Image 1 (cartoon, one colour):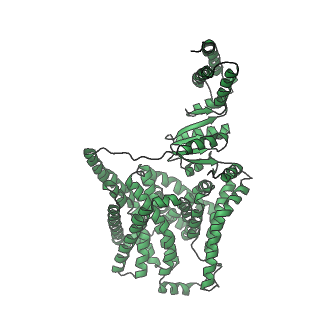
Image 2 (image 1 turned 45 degrees about the vertical axis):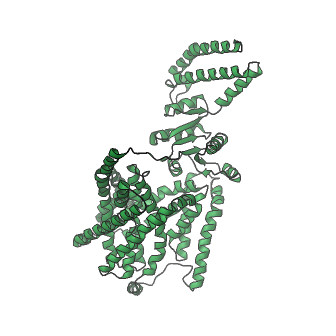
Image 3 (image 1 turned 30 degrees about the horizontal axis):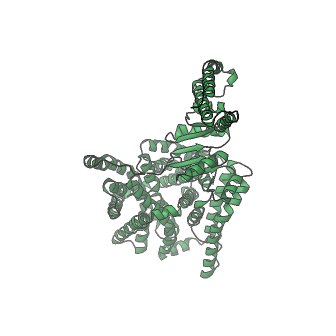
Length: 618
């Protein structure tokens, strides 16, 4: 037990220290984890830790990543990006893999080994590129969009690669492996012939599709009875682990099954709940995976083959930059955006580590070669931040100066992104109003009953707790323009307002307040667009009361507006004296300010109201 705790502590300390330092120097979290693994590698050797065994467990983070990638693949979005996905992304993979495979064969590798290396080196680092583009605000430019299309195509291409690579197995490696060991794990297809195996595989895939379509909602409804957040996390993990296990039992890659399940669940009402619960676990496992990769780097091999490894890394960069630049030119990506795509996505990616382990396990490449290629992948990722710096300080600066002397830059139009927390009486009306004006909304609600009722009317609502930062992140708070908080719990509303104002100040927040004192709480937390839930309806009731007492409608409307103006002014005047958590009757400054308002503003308002009432109609 002590050994396990010690090893766990070492991994956690390495990640906690290395990643913030790497982020501080704009190296990215992936490189931070790799560096952490490099540093603790000797210590793990002293502790006799089986790094490969830990790595096999951590690889499940990649499985979760593909599940989450699958859930992001909306059919409409894919259709809109079809030309860049199939042309730009697909072309990059085909041409890069072909050129790298040809180069490998020229250096004496067999065709099967060369093709395998070409496929895994054609992939770029999704984690590094997307994180860097986001940090530098380049996701919205044409180069950023093109990079996203290429990375998305590569993530999808991992699935057929996992199917294709075992077909490239070397007979010599298979025979030598068979001579060493004949042990196998439990399998549903071990004793079946080819057509029976095919039938079982098809049934397993259909089970994944059926389960994703019809079992997710009933299971989450059942789990929601307990209203325990940790149970939702356990349920999400149960889905992914169960699908991965089923795929393993029929001889398929777990990543293939979870990716397929993610695509099936892309339009599920529980999509954001699954994302928010799996994202932290996925991040931890991926971090652990990259630490184990760093720890497994053979520095003695690096010293022995330093020149070869640097040459291979340089050759990889030259081939991928050339292919990406030419493909970008063919698909209309211009000037600095073309260089952003070519330079930014030219490194090898995190999936190359996974596929190298996969090729080794499936006897495609020998261990001596995979060790060398691991070093090439790691070195290319370590160099990547420097490549971005070169782009930013040299190339981007040059093209920006050219644009300034030729024509003014234009900002492309973008659709406003709106998140609505709560789909009850208030949130439902706001949602209908915004949708009727053509605005796209993402509605989150924690009530299973309300979600089911809205589904009957074909209203899309996502299940989840909006007070959770990870849930807001999954719903798109990073890119949102507006957040409407329409839930009916004062404490939860305050919690969301406080978090969003502190961490996402670019988002305009409209908050529902349950009473006057709640308005002061929200005001203190930084919200300036606050709507009291019963105030507007009360004003309308007051106006109707004036009309019922014989006051003309137009004058009743003026009296209502006058009261609203004075009430608003009095609230602003008193807000500074309010203290969160202090009962109002114990707050001397607040009591004193209220009395001052009643002695000054209220008599003034009363005089004007009576004057309006007694005015003769024009």
